[in-house]
Amino acid sequence: MIKGISIESFIAGFAYGGTTVLVGQPLETLKTLTQVPSSIKTTSSTPNNNNILTTAKHLYSTSGIRGFYRGGTPLLLGGGLMRSAQFGFYNSVLPLMDDNFGKRDKNDYWLGCVNPHVVAAGWAGGIGRGLVEGPFEMVKVRRQVVSDWKLADVSKGFGVTLFRNSFLFSSFVIYMDVLKQQLARYDMTLSPFFTAGICSNMAWLTVWPFDVIKTKRQSGKFEGRSIMWLLKDTMRTGDMYRGLSVGLVRSFFANGISMEVYTRVEKELKVVFNER
Image (cartoon, rainbow, N blue to C red; front, side, top):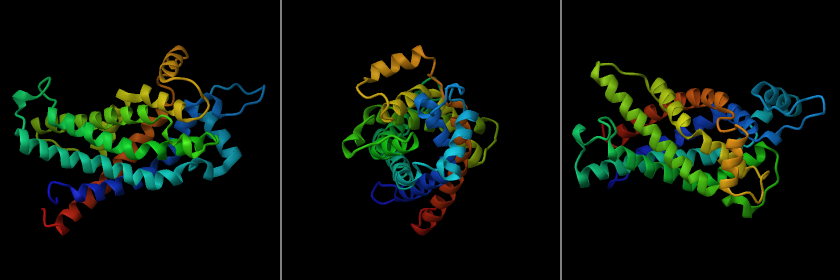
């Protein structure tokens, strides 16, 4: 750590983000196509139900394996940068809060298990991620649903992306912290793979409806519609958790593997920076 900035977390976060894209992009593409019903062109004999199997078959028949990585190029760079921001901000803000306000005792925890400093640092990490991710995410979604875009569109869905990420990452680190507390009570531990896989899925379950709205907003297929209209329409059509199953499978494996990479890289960097 250099002058209160967790450099190793920024670098390890970049490795985490790159790994997440490489491992999870095929399922991420299916998730996006499932969340935007009009993404799959159908014939009169083929119902437009956009289930996972139908979406996967259509994508493979029209684009082959490459289709599953559609939109991955912007996220390969953006994914590294946004994860770098989220972990870097989080691991810089958390010790800063502990130093300035004192480490929270368990008596100060909300509901007896939620550390308020973890919540604040998690929101800081989520905001850092959202500021970077917004434009890259919009381009990724447009390429996945094969929709035209122009430079002026990069801010589409920025607000809901920022809110989703703040809520998502703060939920993730809260679940991580609570899980470690509960395991410690029984002298148990979990590997980084299972810890991140379980907690990332819990976080996505918490914020999934916002992700559906964010995807629709950025798809370019609902031009002129407000966030409130999208929210009401999503509730009316029962799409609040559309794409959840494939999203959770992607989240578990992509985040689990990425956390293993993050942990190894951060450990090696701490040795380099003499911060064992």
